[in-house]
Length: 589
Image 1 (tube, rainbow, N blue to C red):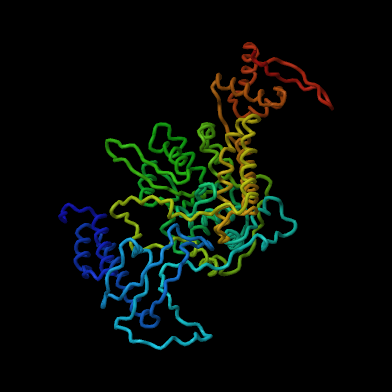
Image 2 (cartoon, rainbow, N blue to C red; image 1 turned 90 degrees about the vertical axis):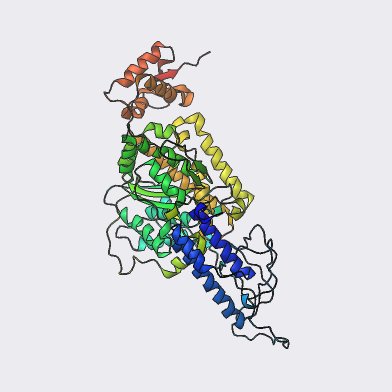
């Protein structure tokens, strides 16, 4: 293949092969030629960084080999999870130094150079030595081959460490969790002038879920990205948790994972995610965003954002967009988009439409509870509280995927991020049958709403999925290889709180003025869903108050349904008080 026929990504791949050959098989040093070729194709910086890192590695081999000659390779975990091993665990032959290179190791048994780098032997031929003396008590250099990208597994956090203060409410008690999620909550609250632990928990789940995204797979095959909407009145301090989320991602060195804070068009988000499928979008005034989306009736490029959000929520999804006259088809491999947004409850629920419930978008976000809380009192904040603790930052970095020198974002050449193979994912499994049973019991509970309340059933369709994602995030933040009973039980309670917040919010704030035929069908469904198929005039008026533009639509619908012999007027005697006047469903024979 001539140079003219090469593509930028092929130039990078060719340089990778040259570096591989140079490090492991004594190939020629083609650094200068590779960089010159890379500059012609606009990827010179990428190739230069790759070769610089390769020379660094070669120097580290020689320096370490003179201090500690390699002996037997010891196995290493490739995961931050204790005991989690890669799918294929092979011992690797020791690689001789380039200056006195022996026969190249077998191609199949050699690991990819950018994932594992082994210490080289001394440059000169070693002389016969006496048996090594017993090791001294003081710390000695390791004699095993050096692994440059090893996760150093530290402590594992436990639910037994959590102490919930007396006097906190049931919802606030759920914000006390072990591990890194709980530590982030404590840090955010410590630096807030108006502290709110519920808001802080939403940000903490988003940050940890992003750091392990596209790498950790939960017990049901679930991913770890979430849509988290913080709802609170204006002036309650919603901006501080969002600011802390950005601050923390920057502190741990994950700035590249911070995505856009606003969404303008569906094509724009697709173009961005093609190169950056793992991202955390922290959005203020989220209600305005959805008001813009649902208000663009004549602009399909904006309105299709809702459809994209629905697909991006799915776990391990591969999205292939349609080709148009102007744009080629685009592939997004396994996107993991976490959205943490904040706005007032009124702004969100009035911006969303009933079609968002019926289409399935409204059941994807986790809505943090907003009713029944008082505005947090303002307080003074100690100086320096805005900086995350060094220990927290260090442990969060252990969760991050260690990037190789060729994992540099290729945005300048419009590269598509590759999919995540099944064997490359770190699986967090159920810790016990009891934990699995709790999950399925909650799933059945949500399914039972189908016969009781259609609207609640639609809102709760993904409550179990959100719960297992939260449980997986907390388990990973505890450095646990399993989702235990305490993880899933906490997550189910948290998901139920979110489900109730969504149900109450849509009932209280959403306005939808039905066309008359649909109004009639909604009334019939409401009466049929009640016990014994009876609903009082009082309850009907309360339920459909926000669906009437002129105030008499309900009365007209009831008269029409009575003419069709679908309902009939009747009184129902209560055990106490006067009889209730209402409407009884007529079952068709």
